[in-house]
Length: 138
Image: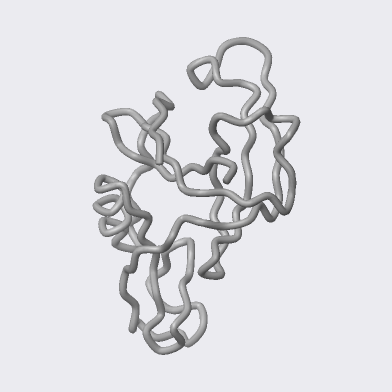
């Protein structure tokens, strides 16, 4: 698990869902997501109720951070940006736990990132040294 300096602002807290467990986990290098205790399934993005049952019987649990690229693209913008890390591959990753999460693919040739590749959790650093989930090719 590596950490990169992204130089981007930290997203503002949600006014509808307490996401503090996500940020506390990230600070410790752990990816934690909401888990529906009624169905035994994870959900992402965080919501006030279970997407499966509508109940509030949710908790936060650590996930493996391992998954498969479900969809991907490459950000190509002329000029400097993202600390000179352009072009930057970005992917929707289907985690082994069954949820999809969007993240940058670090330390990879953008032209070699493809659907179906296995990835593992890595971390970008946002402003204030805040960890944000990203991935590396496995």
